[in-house]
Structures are given as C-alpha cells and as structure tokens.
Image (cartoon, rainbow, N blue to C red; front, side, top):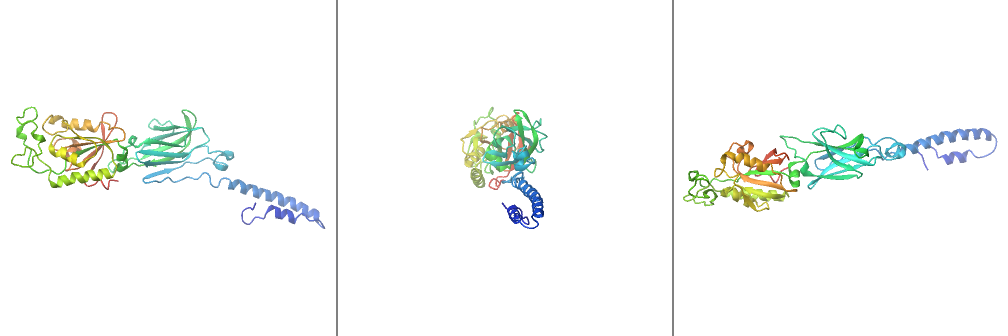
Length: 366
C-alpha cells in the first residue's frame, strides 16, 4: 500500500537493504532504523485516513429550512476507538406536505430525544419550555405541521430543534445536534389547523333595509337573506359584478394552493352566502346566526365570531367564516371587501392572530 506523496514504499526499502557483502552490518543497522521510522509514518497516515469522512457538519437547507450539527465526538470513525459517535449529529428539519420531517445520525447511545422550542435554543433535553417531539431508538421522526404556528412579518417565529442521546428512557444528555425551521403561512395552511375570517366580496348594489327590524321584531322575516338585486324591491345589499369575479378568483387561487377546508360558515346575508358559495372551497356552506350582522345579537357578534375563530378545525383541515365588518372587533372591523384575517386556535379557548391576506394575494402567498 502506498503512503502519502513523498514517502517511499516500505518493501522497496527492505529489498534495497537485504543484500550481503562488505559493510553489511552497517546496512543492517540502517535497515532497523529505517523500518522503525517508516512504520511510524505509515501508522500515523493510516490513523488519519480512518476519519476523513466522519464528523462533518452537514447543512440541511430545504426550502426555508436550515439545520446545523453539533460535534460528532472524537476518535476514528466519529467516536472514541473507531466506534459510533458519542452524540447525535446531522439533524435535519424540513416541511413535507402537512408534516415536519426530522432525520439525524444516531449516537452510541441506545436512544435519542428531540425537543423543540420557539424563538430560542433549548437549554437541554429537559428544558421546561421545550416540547418533546420524539424519544426512541429510530433515526427519523415527524410531527404534524399543525403543531407549529406560521411565521409572519408581524410576529417572526423560528423553531429550534435539538436531538440528544439517551442512555435510558428519560435519561438524556450530551452535546446536541440542532436545526432551525420557519414555517410560512402558505406551508402552514396546507397542514390545516387555521381559521380564516373573510369579509364578503365587493357589494354596493342596493341597500340594507334596516328599518325592517331585527329577526325578533320584524314584520318581514328573513328580509336580510334576500338576493333580490332590483333596488326598487330589494331589501339587502348585493354583490356587484366585481364582487362575483373577486369571490371566484379567490376560490380558484386558494384551491390551487391545496389548502384543505373542513367547514365553511357564512352570515345569512345573501352577499356573504354568495361569496362563500362562489369561492367553492369544498364543504357545503352553513348559515350561522352568530356572525350575521344586525339581524340577531349585534352586540355579541364580535364575541361569537372570535369564539368560532378559536374552534379547532378537524385534523388536516382549515375553517372559513364569511361575514361583515362594521362592528368593533379589532382587525375584523378594518377588513376590505374580500380580505381575510387568519387565526390559529391556541387550544386554550382563544385564537392567535396571524395576519391579514388581501383578496388578490392568495396565489403568491409565501
């Protein structure tokens, strides 16, 4: 076997020094010295070559995902004495459909634990602020994307994952391998778990006949449900031609992105029902009194809307509500025609506001 450039082959040196004749004793002494020095050189090269492909930190960049690996230990082949690495390495985290896929190189320990913390590095495997994502003997894991919250300009969110080696269940430590992940709203909506509260599409045809009274006192029951666009006889405001096209285009863009819906609710006003129907998000549109303006409990409309925004959609789906502005309800009162406010139920009876999405922004939503 040849050594590194500039070193002679051991066999060549031995052949050159095995002849007999005058001065053979001196040559034998020289041969011993050469053999000792050469064997040290060859031994050092062999030890070095044993770890040339081990212990490398790998970049795990896929889409908007990044990862970094911690040290993989010392010694040949990644661990002391040429064995497996003492600590896990090469943790990768990436979004694939509705899941976060995780993979890593295992250590010499029999199991691994992965923990996750938002916007800061885990302090250790038992960090009280961390979520335990996985613990077991495997080298791959996944978690539903709905467990995470989308990042936005208003509220940037970076998830920090760390994998530790475990000697026994619950007994983990050592140096971790780490990875970072940011989930865009476009990615998050594919995984489901969000509620979108839309204002109906553009509507300026005719006017609402509020003088006809609420549902509890009217002499013309259901006047707000009328879709009559003849303003001589109409009792409610209707979508205009722009609003019809706006609702249709919103629905096309949303479906093209693959965002799944499990439920669609709408105010009983015709302009809201038609917006929801024209969007055609999949489920049958359900009328809802709570988000219906004026006709029922106007004072409680905001609370009813936010309660619906806080309800967790069926796993793997999102929810849509189509209602009105014109009431004191935070960002909902400022929505333009066709615009939506996106919320993430927090599992505690509330909803996390994510961002607003203009009616024309769905196709290019990051």
